[in-house]
Length: 270
Image 1 (tube, rainbow, N blue to C red):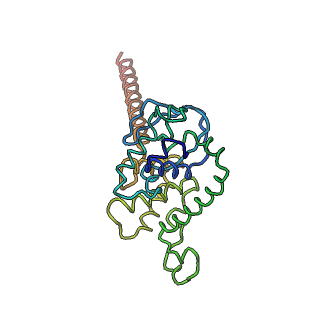
Image 2: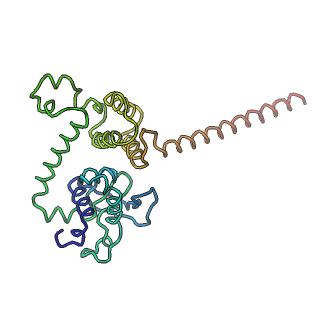
Image 3: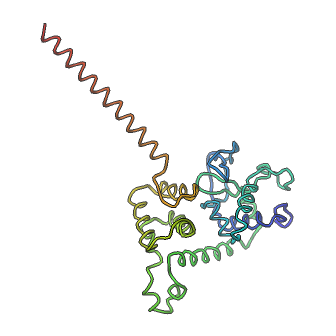
């Protein structure tokens, strides 16, 4: 990476390295369309089927995890866009110079396998990163430092369990829900009881949606800058289509019954 053109772009470099640490091995059997960073529009380019690294987080989540100062966030968003654009001057012309692109549900690190092959310390660093992330999630849940270590029972008793807010969610959703907790606390109006607020949301997700739809609900709100959780648009559209179909079928059945009744009355009158 030292020899990469990316090294000279500080924000893009920090975002990319953070995303690389956050990424997990991932494989897709079909092409994945790229989504623009600043909108929900497709760019027209597709990630070919294959093995990559996948970061299940919104762009702002990656930027904040990279510890980018608040005043630099607009520039950081542009840097994130740049990472997904073609680059003629790139030393590696795989994917036309693109490095990481947004798809539905997160970001793909395109040359992830190459970076893993070059870095023998990746496993150890990722383990340290996961531990830091775990500690960070504990803090977001309202557990203070002493409560985490268990050194002060009096402190521990004053705070809820670290998993109180999302214990009803499956492991695959919890990481995204923690991103939502951090996002929601930083955006919108504060609530009186955060623990109760997030516990109710987690319960609603667990009781209402599949695991895939739970993730989409969270992604949808962070993607659109919303401060609440709502049913996925595709579900609303699908339900409306099903309702419309049921109404058409009901109307057809009613017309058939009326036609049959009219036919029967006509025969009787004869």
